[in-house]
Image (cartoon, rainbow, N blue to C red; front, side):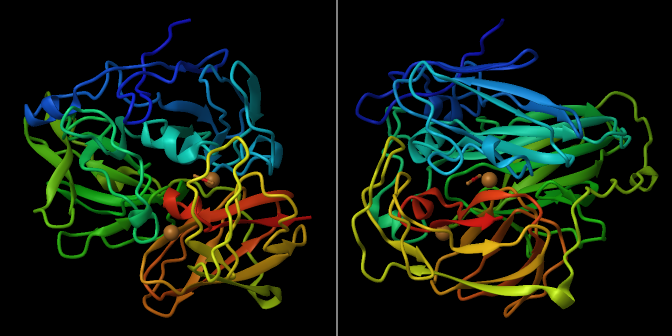
Length: 458
Ligand code: C2O
Ligand code: CU
Ligand code: CU
């Protein structure tokens, strides 16, 4: 089997010395994470490519309703566990250490095996040593194809990620205590698929499905698309079902860590014309994260030829009989000692859910934040009591945002709700997947300094 070179250096001190190889071995797909040395800054300043010989972890392809086998072999010297973000799969396959499985030790294999019930754009990342391993690039995209081909001419996956590098292109520490206690620690090199503004060719006048995934540990992207007739067709994996306004430079789309957006793009008909995925970064002008370039003779497709994507089989909550549960996200009142286990602690408690900081991955005797009954409908009221934004993610279940005290929310199916400053949002779900499901902020520094818990469905 061909192993792919992959970026995974160690911490800043050791520079780009690798942590070893981390393999994901499967009959059909395999990925290996190996030490890689690279010179990103040079390459970026030269307007050129590539952080490592091979860039991001491979896009894993599956098909709705078809079993996937993904044995993960850990050849790192650290523990790990792999989580499949957004997939509604059995709890034992969810990859959360101490909650759904023991961490995967060095030289151990864990056989992940599941059948994705939903089509759409998902992703995978470790849930053990999360900060360190994600900061070093272990965040890959998963595409689950619809049972029936929706009729695009091509697809483009864009994995948006920042890296934190020093002048010598070595990794800076993945986080700072100051950042963790506030909005998070931001990277200083922005990439799309680990590249600086890559250009991808697609046929002129063709219909492209652009799958954009924010796998960053911290950054909330503000996106819009330039230069094409385009439409948002899916949000956090699930078809939108309704027409959403296209974001603009003045009114960009907020995509938090963990979130995904699929655009249907009608490529320009003139050869060489480009479509740009634009991002607004603080203190900078809008910049193109990536470009799609029209090539060849126009095939003359039209967005209106696309049928709406088929709905995923997610149960609709029965709001009349839903029980309400409240969750408050905020600072940590009393601190308290974080514990560690094998999965890495950031050593601080800054954040809390319902005023309790999650004490750490291996925490003993920490019960669920709520216990939901299998098959029943629930409304969860999420209150952000902090001035920082929090992308709140629930594993194993999909939910619908109902209302906010600050804005009108589209009734989109999602797994991650980006809470604005002082926002109170109600979401609704059917508790139809049994198990203990992690519930946390996807700013990893928040997650790992208290803003975590779990919800039990029984
Ligand atoms: Cu994408 Cu608990 O994570
Ligand atoms: Cu998840
Ligand atoms: Cu947060």
